Image (cartoon, rainbow, N blue to C red; front, side, top):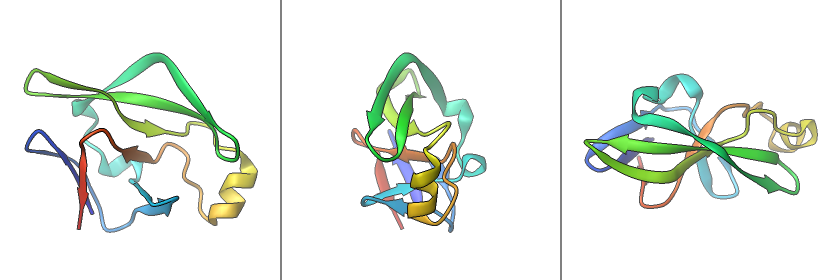
Length: 99
């Protein structure tokens, strides 16, 4: 799987975790040089917990909050998914996730 935005590959791996139709990429498969933490912005999923966000910055363009991750997912969510997805990164807002 690959996550691509603005012509650049942000993440690439053969081992994503699918949760609710979204592909979550392992932290070491993501090019962190293209991400900037979205300070102070969080959302809460009733079963996964609090999500944090990254802005994606490529060639001077910014995709605000184009990626999210769970720094401390609820243990019940890890149990439900069957894998630890702590800090795995998912994408949206125009980012293409392709095989």
